[in-house]
Image (tube, rainbow, N blue to C red; front, side):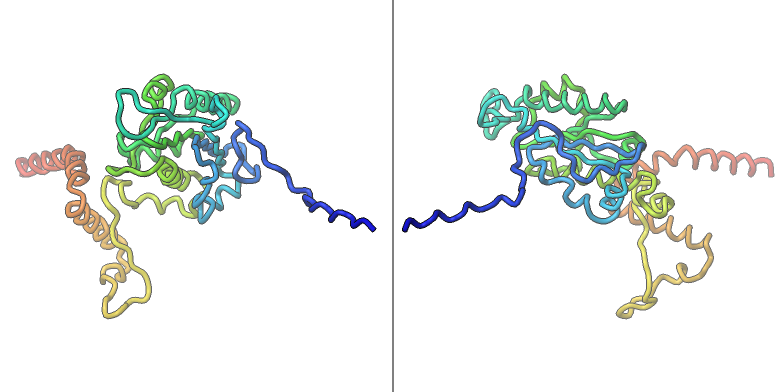
Length: 287
């Protein structure tokens, strides 16, 4: 008696993924009409939203206050190997991302921005870019969205950056393996300033860099911890004294830790002090 073949395993209705050039929505579409729109062009779309899906940014994402779409640059490659890079012109180590491939990805992202009817900046995360500042973060947060280009290898061919008017931004004087982590940091800084993301909008007013100074120290209960107490002024209930103490602390920390910021702060405040000194001098002469 012939034995019957064992039944083939069932797929249980699982969908087989297929390659697509379409941007991949990273959350269920709950976007509100005025949601901040973030597009990320990357070779590793699976990295997003990553940490941005947690905490306040994650809650804002679920509530539809902002959207995050990751577009795989490799989908725009011309050959069957999906090649996106080539050797640097003039020789040297590493590889450079090809301008034609990156341009196609940028063009696709631009069409989506046009469909939304919003002018949004295109930013390339690069260690040679302009340093990211809190003022630039606030400008970006006041917009409707942005497109972030994440480089890999030695970077992106300069011609496509020039042709597409891409803004270059740096997080600091160091180098990462790619722009994805830098893009997450920039998005976190921007999204937290969007309306409705933080419970108390006033909480950003005294933060580091908001006034050109580092932030003052913070304390909370217990009142005494391992022999160390909270500064007396913070327990006084005198709001004017507390505000002055915090300002003095912010100035002292900035002077000590960030001489560059302190010099800029001093230069900005110099005209105000000069006016005050002039007024005082005039008043003294009248006396």
